[in-house]
Length: 384
Image (tube, rainbow, N blue to C red; front, top):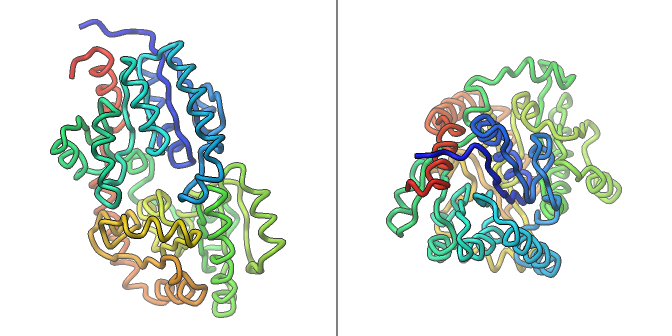
């Protein structure tokens, strides 16, 4: 079997989590194919690895039905132009990284043109919108799954899939060095450090940050030594400053450009928007309170599509409410503050949840980069 030494791979990572996941597997691909050309839509981490970003990922980082409608024309225009460019100069492989609403439609059109397609991150059909299974089967040749239970589900519906593990599980140490993280961030070893992660998209930050801040102002009255650290997603610092001009925020608020991982390693507790950040917090063994709030209409549309009682990844993977979830009208400042206080005042519960997270971490560790390389070799040589 001959193996091509030069390869072109197109990728679309439409949000910060996809940018992070891509950046953790790209080095393995580049090691296998030193002349590899990577192109499409990506973020700053991918660009730092010589990815040729034709559009910035922020153009696609929109969540919720109402929010997507506002940007629908621009998003569809980008997809049309991207499709034309890829068809006119076909890559050896297209990899859609998460963002299934954008990537599955694009993959379907590319597959019709004979371009092999992969979806990296299985759409959460086990949690909501199970009707997408047919669309996945028609759109992609293969799915790389982050969680061990996903391939069997996809296989039952005629979809080729491989469990690759979660790249973050290998990138994050089993035992984070809390004191070193605090030292690197200029934080005291003794003060209460509370991480605030309101999401990476503008719509999420707009809805979540003021609510997290309101909870923090209640907490700082109770814990005078508390410091609240918000690692701001790339490109969103100006938005955070605009929100500060409109809303009350805690006196001891530290804004950082990125650095979510050191912040989670340093934190006693985190307030986290539902999404990949909840898994990152779990991998850093950080107790958390999961919150989510979106426009009323988007919530009314999405709520009936849920298939499970949980929305946070740690709870879904543990199949239990191991950490609290406060969604929509339940996400009040008082409820958030009360849930954070529970963790701060119950060290035995913290030890229990850290042990649970350590078990989860071990389950997700695979040699993801090597598994991805092997999968790419099989796909591009039709050895599947």
